Amino acid sequence: MARRGLLIILSSPSGAGKSTMTRRLRDWDPSIRFSVSATTRAPREGEVDGVDYHFRSEAEFKQLVMDGEMLEHAHVFGNFYGSPRGPVEQAIESGCDVLFDVDWQGAQQIKNSVLGKHVLAVFFLPPSIPELQRRLVSRGQDSAEVIAKRMQKSWDEISHWDGYDYVLINDDLNDTEARLKTILTAERLRRPQQPDLVDHVRKLQMEFEESL
Image (cartoon, rainbow, N blue to C red; front, side, top):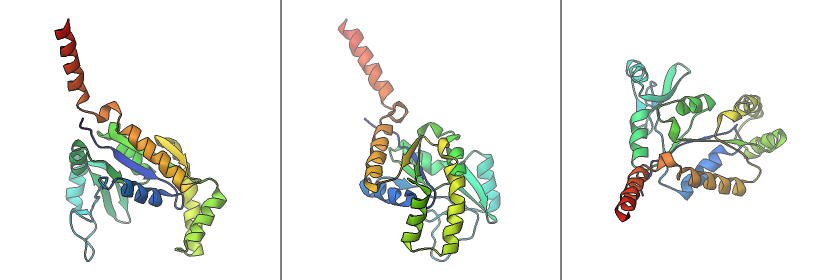
């Protein structure tokens, strides 16, 4: 039977495993697509419209928001960013899951949108704050100053854990990956994700009546 795709939102404070889980999820199922954001900033060298971003003027962007064509949007450093509704709607109707890279505010906007009933939102918690800091340091990617800023921001992100459908304590990557796959597999079978169920039940009803 056909199914509708899910709008998958994975969130966590920096260092708690979101990027790793995103990569593992797409390795497990390459059909999962990334939502291409719209932005009012100018394209950078090498960026392609519709691939890296949907580049729009500020007037066009604001009109899309007014028309209800943005699932979420935000104003960041002088430019607007958002998730266009049309491409996402087309993807999930064709049975493809769409992955979003948004913060907790964007997650709430998407959950409150017209496609909210198809959202799967998962938040990853670290096992402890010292472990979170250890992971950030062990990556060797950031200066001590950047790590300190990430740690300061982490509590604000963690404080919104209860706005998600599932919360996983990421104490072991393999165990967390297995739990995430189980969640996704189950969510794909939810009744709203199976548009052919109504026709199948009607068929069963007709067969039942014919057998009387």
